[in-house]
Length: 273
Image (cartoon, rainbow, N blue to C red; front, side, top):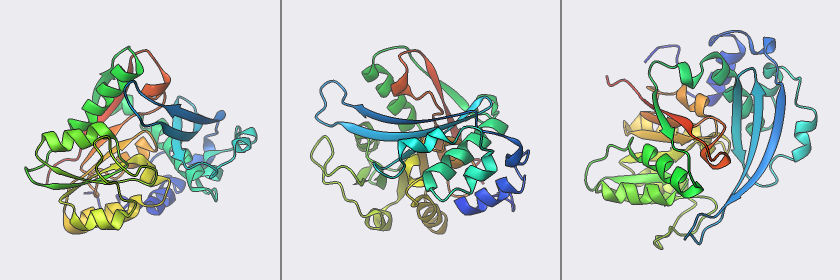
């Protein structure tokens, strides 16, 4: 691990503002900003997923952050275009800060050009076909011992199944679900599942709700694997590979659910010591 590698999101924010990753963010502007409210219920499912996203475009990159309902009003976007990224990286709203950091890091270090990234093409197809391909790509990053307890922070039912298929015991945690597809209880107490976990799988949404640094610190302290699957802040999470994050599925915009055509996600694995 590089001694200058950030150990927390605030450290990353400060390093970006100081130009440690490339041009100063004050030299780069947001050209468009948009706010999305999106719901999905896949065929055969009884669960409706409800998501809100902030997207900030700067150059050839989109920064993305999902957030909870009511956390950011749609009219934020009316004045966001034209701001330089440094202003938004310092914004009082965490989703704005994360989206701006993601736009900056995705622009100066695009996933598509990363030598360490494995490109996975999600096929043209229905929402069900594309979701299955995406979830299979994330599940392919799991490397767990039989009987291992795996904290799943941000419940996606196919990942619950993937953990079980590898002989692991899922410990599901989510703010918005109370049970998995199979009726397993889902807790909203992240500390509870972290305390029991031999490995952790976490959504990029932990960046926007402030829990990412807590997860990162716990996994470093206890030397347990941390796999992140991220639409939110995919380039932000990448900055912590080898500093707590052991593997990452990075899916920059346009996300699988917003296109019927082939799109890419990028898988990373931290170098082993």
